Image 1 (cartoon, rainbow, N blue to C red):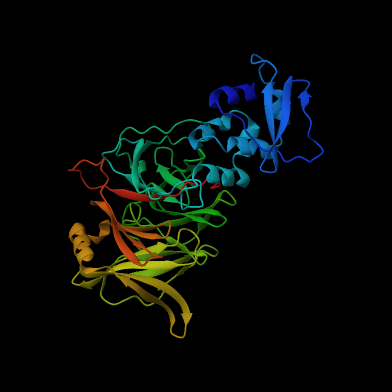
Image 2 (image 1 turned 60 degrees about the vertical axis):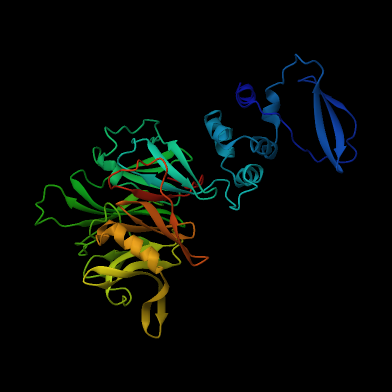
Length: 443
């Protein structure tokens, strides 16, 4: 039944190579399927040519169960990716087979040979806006330099969909991404949802307590999984007496760890725009005025500050990591006086020299681009946020539909053009995310 479903649904012509020994050169017949198999020599290799004795004789489904896994992987690699992903529910063997590295390699070579990326999937910049429908998102395909409009359905493991009453529901403001995964909050059920949109898998993570109010969320993927850093306050407490409690969720153990004591650092409006950066085994945060960079040690829960001597006359600061690898950390900031930026600069964090940790200036934004960016912000730098995307440091503004980005490998600055599907007049609320599809990103 499974074989017939695959055969009829996909309409794939089966063609595969089998290397045989020189002694096997004669025709033979499969007694159960009544199929005549004739070996042919092509380019010094043997290819098996199957020809049914009668055109009305169907292929015996039991042949599929006898195929070696590597042959089945090769056959499936010819399917379009969309069709291939829809086959996951066909049978258990297909579900596990499609996630194997050999299949991904074969699918990449057969479907994206013209792409410069070694991944079989493109990478995207993901745009959300309150005027979009809650299930509609716009993606910029970085590999093909084009815009794509898609509809996404966020589902839980029990296949129950998340429904939201309006495009501006509160879950949307707490959506964050890292390493191919998305994390969003569902305040109605006091939980977080971690989703892999490509693999269509998700995990619902309940708050440590139901009487907690989410103040800050940092979601980062690490080489061993992902980490969720949250600041909670007791919803029953008054604003003047409320204290923040630090909780860290580790995907390796699937549990929360609470670190006692008040966090003691003002992170500003981080719930909307600014996350911590994973670097050297800890989470780093840039604080509002008085500016500083602090480190939260994920091992012992200790807070260290300040980290490195900051540049002089900074007007705002944003931290950027290297996409979860934790090897490099950058600082984007404005330099000026009286709260007005005259230039935008990029620094890289350097550790342990004769003078201690320091920030080394890497680049400065060209003057004309700087003028445009400053005019976009109107000197309201709380609207500025940054993130890393596939070798790019992206600098965005909540009130502007374009992205200013820096290519680290080429040391050049660029503007990403405005999305053509956006109306000419639209309010603020532009939120960009890095979306690098990853079948292996486990939730």
